Image 1 (cartoon, rainbow, N blue to C red):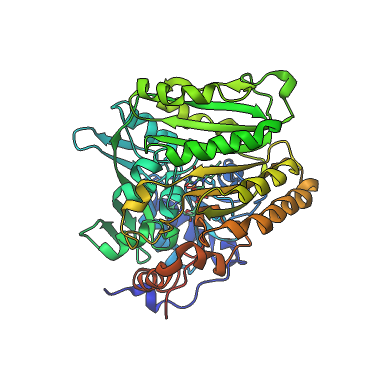
Image 2: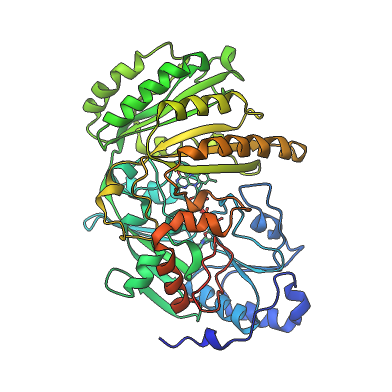
Length: 481
Ligand SMILES: Cc1cc2nc3c(=O)[nH]c(=O)nc-3n(C[C@H](O)[C@H](O)[C@H](O)COP(=O)(O)OP(=O)(O)OC[C@H]3O[C@@H](n4cnc5c(N)ncnc54)[C@H](O)[C@@H]3O)c2cc1C
C-alpha cells in the first residue's frame, strides 16, 4: 500500500493554534470545501462543541469542523495533513480521559452525523459515527431488534464500539465490536475504505477494539438480534446493612444466570429518585440492575425469588420496553459533573473482593460516586482469543470505581478515594483492563494491559494504516517503526 502521509514532515506542535500557522484565507478556503460549519474560538456553538461529558476536561481546540458527511471528513483530513496540524475526533464526547479534544488541535465533531438505517430482513443496522447509543436502539427496536450496546444511552457509539463495548446483551452476543460486520473509514491519507472480514481484514481486526488509532470511522454496520421490545428489567435496592447477604445472592444469581440474564450490582448513596423513599435518600444502599431478554414469563419466574430477597427499599423490576432499560442509568451520569474512574477486569467475585469493595463503598466522599460490577461472562468466551484485539475473553466481570462530584475544590478528595480503592482492589484483577475506562494519566503500561498479547499486532497494523500517527489523540498505539 502506498501512503503519502509517510513522506510528510513532522506536524505542528499541539501547543500551536491554527491561527499561529494559518492565514485566514486557508480557513476561508476550507469553508468552501465543507457542507458543515467551521467554528473558531468565540463563535456561537464553539464552547458547546468543545465541552465534554466530563467537566474535568476544559480544552480549547483551535478549530472545530462539524462534519455533515463523508466528504467533509475527507476534506478535514486533507486540511489537517496539508497544514500539518494535530487532529482529534469527537463522537459522543463521553470518554473519561477527554480524548475528543486537545488544546490547539483541529477537532472533527461528528455529532451532526446521526443517521441510522435498519435492514430488518438482513438483521443489520448501519449507523453514522455521530450516533449516540439511544439513536441506534430507537431505530432497531422499531423492528424488535438490537445490537449489543452499553448501559447509558447518551454514550457515543463510535468510542464505545472502537474500544470494545459491553452492555446488558454482552452475555448473549459478546463485545459490541464482535457484532460489527463493516466499518466505513477515512484513512490517514484521506482515502475512503470499507473494512470487513474480506476487505482489508487487518484493518477490520484492528478496529474491533483498537480504539480510534486507525482512521476516522464514518459508519458502523452492526449485526442485530431479536430483542424485546418487551423485556423484564429494572432495579432493586436494599439498605447497605443488608449488603453482605445481597452481594452473596448477586454472586449466585450471576454465576447461575442463563445468557439472557444480565445483573449488575452497585453500592452508593441513595439518590433522591421517586422509586426510593425519602427516608433512604442519601443513605448507603446496594442495588442490582437487572435485564432479562428471554421470554418475559420465564424472566418473571426466574426473578421472582430476587423480589423476595431481604427487605428492599425500592423495586422497579418489571416488564418494560427494552428502550427504557437502556436509559435506566442515564440520569445518574449527567454531562457536566466532574468524573474520575478506576477499573479492572475480574475473574469472578470472590469473598475477599466483595468484602473489600464494600469497605471502599462505605468510604466514598460524594453522593454521586459508586462502586459497580458489570457482568461479562458468556458469549465473549465463544470467540477465538485473536478474534479481536480487545481480547480479555477470560473476564467474568468488570469493576468500575466511579467517582463523581460537582466542585473543583473536591477534586483531590474524590480522586484520592478512587485511587485508594483501586490500589486495594486491583489485586483481584485478571491483569487486563478496559481501554475505554482508562483515565487521562493511565498511559502505555495500562494500554499494554488492555491489549495484552495483541498489542504488537496492533502496532504493526498502525504502521501500515497510520505510519505518521496522525490519529494519536486516543489511547495511543504508536506505529512499529
Ligand atoms: C456515562 C458513561 C457510561 C458508559 N457506559 C459504558 C458501557 O456501558 N459500556 C462500555 O463499553 N463503555 C461505556 N462507557 C465508556 C465508553 O465506551 C467510552 O467513554 C467511549 O470512549 C465513549 O465514546 P464516545 O464516542 O462518546 O467518546 P468520545 O470522547 O467522543 O471519543 C472517544 C475516543 O474515540 C475516538 N473516536 C470517536 N469517534 C471516532 C470516529 N468516528 N472515528 C475514529 N475514532 C473516533 C476519539 O478520537 C476518542 O479517542 C461509558 C462512558 C460513560 C461516560
